[in-house]
Amino acid sequence: EIKYALTVGATAAVHARVEDERRRAAAEKAAREAKVAALRAEAAACEKDAAASAEDVKLHQAGIDELAPKLDQVEAAFAEQQDRVEKELAKLEEMHAPLEELKAKLSVLETSRNEAETLRREHLDSKQRLIDDLQRLATAPLTPVRAAP
Image 1 (cartoon, rainbow, N blue to C red):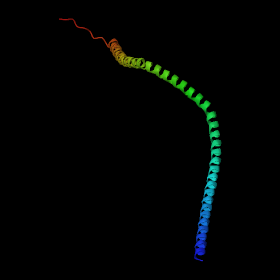
Image 2: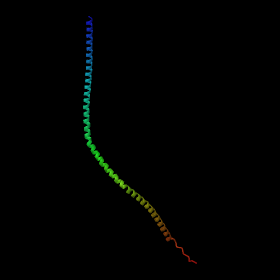
Image 3: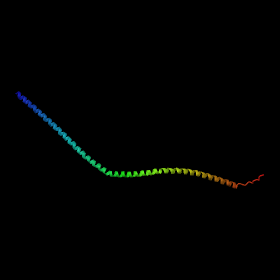
Image 4: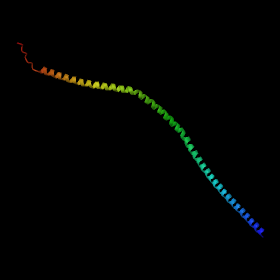
């Protein structure tokens, strides 16, 4: 009987151990399958996001393709206009010194003209005074001149 009790006890322990191993293996398998399912779901979501991003990329590329030639045209026109402006500025710079010289000469001439105009008026005033003096003398009664003794 003792032998049987040990064998039955040992068999029960072996069965319990085997059952624990089976449960643990089943739990690991279930956890692994759950993880695989979660990763597959995540991969599917990433694939969906990638497809949506690919559509965004196509839309943005279409916008880039549409704007790139316009940008090239505007940049070319800008560069051309900038070149014209720089040439005009260079011409203006060349004209600046002669312009300032002419302004200075004009200022001197205007000052001289003003001085000449002032002198002309003074001469006209002097002439008018002389004419007035001559008219007074011409109309003044003559006084006899006495002979010297």
